[in-house]
Every structure is written in C-alpha cells, then in structure tokens.
Amino acid sequence: MSKLKGWKEVPRGGNILKAGSAQEYETGSWRTFRPIHIEENCINCLRCWIYCPDSAILLKDGKVVGMNYTYCKGCGICAHECPAKEKAIKMVREDEYEGG
Amino acid sequence: MATKTKKTKGATTGTRVALTGNDAVAEAWRQINPDVVAAYPITPQTELMHKFASFVSDGLVDTKFVLVESEHSAMSCVIGASAAGCRCATATCANGLALMWEMVYIAASLRLPISMAVVNRALSGPINIHCDHSDSMGARDAGWVQLFSENVQEAYDNAVQAFKIAENPDVLLPVMVTLDGFILSHTTEVLDLLPDDVVRDFQGEYKPDIKLLDPAHPITMGPLDLPDYYFEHKRQQVEAMEHVPAVVTDVAQQFEDLTGRKYEFIERYRLDDAKVAILILGSSAGTVKAVVDMLREEGKPVGMVKMRMFRPFPVEELADALSGMDAVAVFDRSASFGAMGGPVYIETLAALYGKDVPFISCIYGLGGRDLTPGMIRPVFEDLLKGKTEPRVRYIGVRE
Image 1 (tube, rainbow over the protein chains, first blue to last red):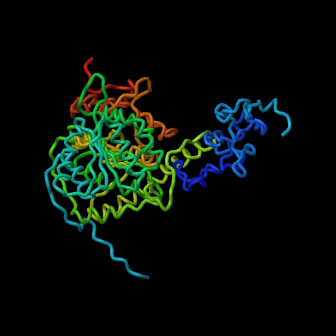
Image 2: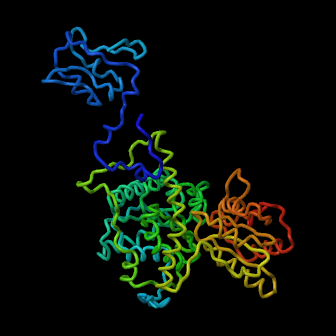
Image 3: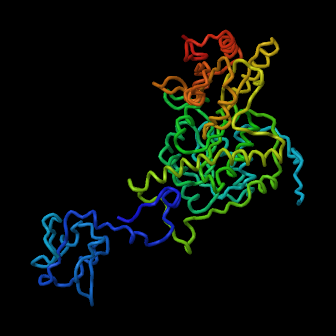
C-alpha cells in the first residue's frame, strides 16, 4: 500500500484537486475471485472490455490479452457477460489460484 | 517608520433606524449582496426572508434567490452554490434546522463558508413557535461557529461580521448567527446601520481558492472518504475551529474601528468586584443586566457574563472571568435530557474544572416562557447566601 498522508498534507474536506487520481488507488487488493482469461475460448467480442468498471481488461491489437490485476477488484462482471459458448473468463478464488 | 493612518473609532456615521431583528439581518444581507440565498419559510424566520425577497424583487441586490421545497433543500442549495464558488446565506429555526440536519454537518465538513441566521425557536413537540435555544444548541457538534445576539443591534452586527469570519482562509467554516425568536425577530428596536459602501468594503470580494465551477482546474468535492482518510479530515476540522478565536477577534477589531462597537467572546457586566454571577446567552442578558443594576443599587456584589460566541467555546475567557467567584448560575434556554444540567452549564463546569467554583444550572424560558426580573433576583440572592442546592433548577415552571 502507498504511504498514507497526515492531516496537514491532504486537501481540506476530502476534496480531490486533480482529475484521474483514481489511478493511484490500487483496488486489486480488494479481490477475492480472480478472473482468468482462456485465450482459446475467446471470440474477442470485447464485451468484457466494455463492461469492466475498472478498465482492467488488457487489449493488444484489438484482442483481449489478459487482465490488469493491479486494479481488478474481482467483481466478475466480465465472466458474467462473456457470451462465448465455452466461457473465455472464469473466476478462481485467490487462495485456490496457482501460478500465472 | 512608515506612518499608518488609523480611522478614529466610531468615525463612520451610519443611519439610525428602527427595525425588527428579522429586518435588521435582511438589511445586513442587502448590504453584503450575497451571490445565492435559498430559503424555506418557518415562523419566526419567515419575515427575514420576506424582507430579503422584497430586496431581490426591487433589484436592490444581485442575489440569485432560490425558493426551495424544504429546509433540507435550502441547505443543500447553498452547499452546492458555495462549492461552486458563491457567497451564500440561508435562514431557518427549530424544526427547519432539524430537517436540514444532515446537510448542516455536510456544509461544515466540506469547509464551506456559508452564513445562516437561526431565529431561535423551540423544537417540537409539543409544537411551539416561540423562543428557546433547543434548535441551535442541538447543532453544537455540527462544526459551525455560533454567535448569539442580545439585541437587534447585535444581530445586525453579527450578521455583518459572519461572512468575514467564515471566509477567512484559516477558518473556512460556516457561521450561524442566532437571534431570539419573536423577542428579537419581531420586536422593533433602534439600531445604527453602517453605510452600504462601508459594509461592502468591510466584506471585500469573496475569492475562493478552489471551486467546482472552474473547468480549467477540475476537482471533486464530497467523495467517499474511507477509514484511511476520514479521521484526517475530521482532525483538519478541529484545527479550523481552533483558528476561529483569533479570526473572530481580528474581525471584531476591524468592526470596532469602523463603528466604535466592541465585540468579544464574552461580555463582562459589572463583574470586576462581583462575588457571584449569572452566565447567560441571547436576549435575556438584557433582563439580567437590569437585575444586576437593581441589586448593585442595594450594594450587593453581583455581575453577569454574556456569552456571544458559543462555538468555539471560550474556555479560557470563561475561566478568567468566573474563577474568583463564590458561586455562579449558568442559565440555559434549553434542556439536555438525561444530562446533568443544561448544555452551557455542562461545558462551563468543564471549563472551570479544578477552579473550585460552585455552579448551579438554571433551565429557563422553554417554549417562549418569559424570564422576568422577579425570577432572576431570587437566584442571585441564593448565590449570595451560598445556597447551591438544588444543583439543577427550572426557573419559571409551575410545580
């Protein structure tokens, strides 16, 4: 976790003085379930990319190449929305997940 | 050394007029010309907004006047406008203040320098439209500065000083100016108004350092604040309140330079050689002064302390004023149910901790019950006799 600031250092009243600061808030630590991308099942419809609330679906040349686990909260919307016959995203409990 | 010319005290001649308390506060706001005023009517505040609405209709102010559907919306409206960078005011009392409760706290925690007139009225129920302090006393932990007024002149003067205190960069907290419902709000008294240009110069232009309506510098106000930062922001609020006394003193000094009228956190009335004293807020201070004068004629060493600033609580000034007393009665125009006396009593007791002064709590005037000289005199006489039991008394209630 990044170093937390003291009360004399933060803007008053909880104000956030610059845009895009959510990028500094690494929500990946919230995750209980990890989405795993299964490339052979993926039809690259990009629905997961559209729905992901944290913009954590990684694309390369218009194709899904994985997830950004620094921000992915593990909400599972991507897996729920995946229309492929054989789901291209499955959710695995972090404590049962082995290797990358 | 460069010479600096200082205006002679009281050199600014104003206009002597007869106005009600409500009209006097509206007059102060006409002179200040706030950017946004929102209001919902509630007796006895209604005439204040009637008067201000007529100034809007007559084109005497540039204010955007917003008629909302409730007090919750009135406070929400001025919070939004203040966050956008406007100078804002509203007024309410009693159940209206209770209905805006959620937003009263949010105004303070967002650090918005809003000014609100609270025309003190008893909280329901049973429903009652007359004066007591249960409304603003209930808001004592909301994070607002609270200034009480003894008479119509003080209501006007506090209203003129409120924005300047609130908008100080070391403060940035909302300020509540109270005036006793009907007793001041609907009673015509003679007072001195400052000239319009003097009031406007005194206020200066409001230049917020940050505001929502600044597309070149987009910011977020009021985001979710979780356990990792909420506490830090509350600590900032405590610090802001600690800056208030110095700013109130500075603003009062500038005001005194203009008017000759002196304002402190507390007023000491015939206190120097007093052996016993009454501490009180609001319009009843005038009645107590009359009783002090009567008893002084009889050679009795009595005095009075009037509290003008209740938030932040003037701990050191009270300790200094009251620590030598043989006995003190603290008069509260509200009850704190289940507590060991009225709210002002409890805090004064804490301020005098270790000073060994006997205190009694006198609850009076609930729901507009008059406090007469005949009710005050026996309290002074008991204090002079050292009779401090019962510790909590109800002045003017029928047994």
